[in-house]
Amino acid sequence: MSKELIIAMIEMGRDGLIRTAQAVPDDKLNWKPLDNGRAVLDLLSEAAWVPEIVTRLLESKGEWKPSYEYFKQGAPERAAWTRDECLEKLRANTDAAIAAIRDVSEEELLQPMKMPIGGEITLPLGIWVMMTYRTFMSRTAQINYIQTLYGDFESH
Image 1 (cartoon, one colour):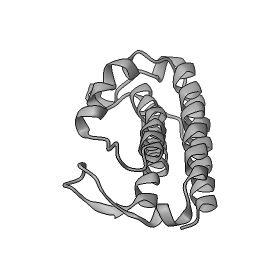
Image 2 (tube, one colour; image 1 turned 90 degrees about the horizontal axis):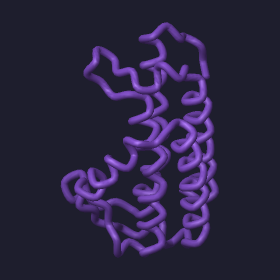
Image 3 (tube, one colour; image 1 turned 135 degrees about the vertical axis):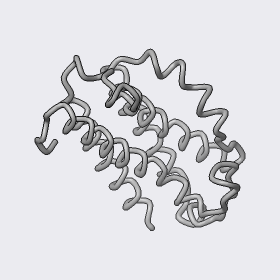
């Protein structure tokens, strides 16, 4: 997969997530389905943070590796973010990740990398970079589902 295709997919995913998040009414940002699910702001803040992880991974040339513990450490900070802060961080962190993607070669993206998440899986670096896109798309889908639960059936 080429860098330009990876970047285009990440940008498309980010833009769709932004549109979806902006369509959520203020009074539904912290609403949880069945009082047990995840709130829109929780999902959005997580998605805003993932490109920062990818940037660190790329800038370290794979020397730094994210872990579940690292991800959990950021949860308290993310929990305090407003929608505007989430969107600002989503844009800035995605821009930084895209710049970091542009700085690596196509060959580097093909290099296998073992990660301590997912049961010590080894995949090409480019697949790990696509974690950004996968997160954007899955969080968009989750927010879309929450929207249907409070009666919003529009396509965003």
